[in-house]
Image (cartoon, rainbow, N blue to C red; front, side):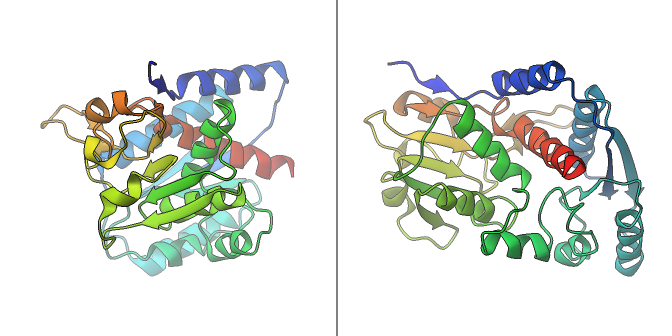
Length: 280
C-alpha cells in the first residue's frame, strides 16, 4: 500500500475556493512586528503578506533592529494593539535573545492576539474557554479535518513541548479525546515511546532527527512533521523537516512532506484566526 502524503496544497486550494464561493469581503488589517534581520523570519513575513494580499487583507509590517530596547518595543506593540483600525497583531519569531517573548505578547489585546499566545488566551484554553488555536496547532487540526483523520481514542505522541507548538498541539489533541504522551529532550528511551504512537507529531527543530528506527514496520502510523530546518549552503535555501522523510516514508501509513506540509497551513491558520476575530 502506497503511503499517503498529507500535502497542504489541496487544503489551501479548498480554503481559497471556499473564500471565493462564499463571497466573503471582510475588511481586515493585520500588523506584524519583525524585529532583527533573521533571514528565515523575513521569508515567513513575506509569505504571510503574499497570502493575505490574495484575500485583500491589509498587512502592515513594523521593522526594528535586533538591539531595540525592550521597554520601547513593548510600548510600540501596545500602541498598535490599541489602535481601533487594527484587527490583529502578531510578533514574528524568533526574537533577539534580550527580548522576553511572554512580556511582548502580553502587550497585545487578547482579542487581537491571533497567535493566541498571550497569558489571557493561554489561560482560556487551559480552562476550556473559547479562544483561537495557535497557528501550528490549527494547521495540524486542518490536516486531521481535511484528510478525515479521526483521532478520538488514538495514542498521539508529541515530540517537543514548546509553548508555541508542542503544548498547544498536545492540548488540541486532548480536546479531541486522544490519549497524549508528550516527549522532550530529557525523555528516556524515546524510540520505544514513538513506536507506540498511532499518530507521531514531531516539533523539535533538529533536522532529520526521527529516522526509521523511531517508527514501527507495520505501516499503520501517521507522522506529522512540524519542523522546518534550513540545511542549504550559503546563498541557497533548502529545507527539511525533523523527520528523515526518505527513511520513514515507506514505513508509515501517512506522512506530511517538508516542504509542502504543515508550514503553509500555519499561515492559513493565522489568517483564519484574523478573519474570525473580525466577524465575531
